[in-house]
Length: 189
Image (spheres, one colour):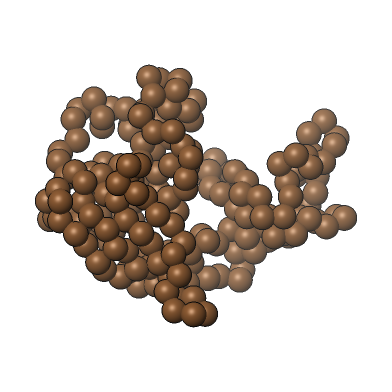
């Protein structure tokens, strides 16, 4: 599926634009693999190419409530390489990849870098928000077996996390879609 859209949230002065996937660079994804929010896919699944959409997802349908307990103070040592703190990658507002004891990968946002601790927010940036989507379906078709195979390789980590390493996905990884990424390779689109 490919969609062009604008995503809005409630701001201090009404709805404010937080993300856009223009027709020239639509959000491309395969449904049913958890790449996009289930409620987002559900709203779009019956629409044909060329149809417009305008819908809202509640915080329960999107990223849930903001959880203060998901803001952690981590030891600075965690972010050291060869005994030196990684200033190049760890700074306020940096989005950083993390991994838990079970090997699950996720991202966090650095809130503060202190002398002894680094405060990291693990909440999704849109947690607690109602999401308002307005856009157009560019394409809605079944994925080819090659496209599904490509996605499965990425989800399993078989391509090293880069679209370039296994033939490319056709995306240039410039903008970020907060609800997922089009080829499943772990990069922003």
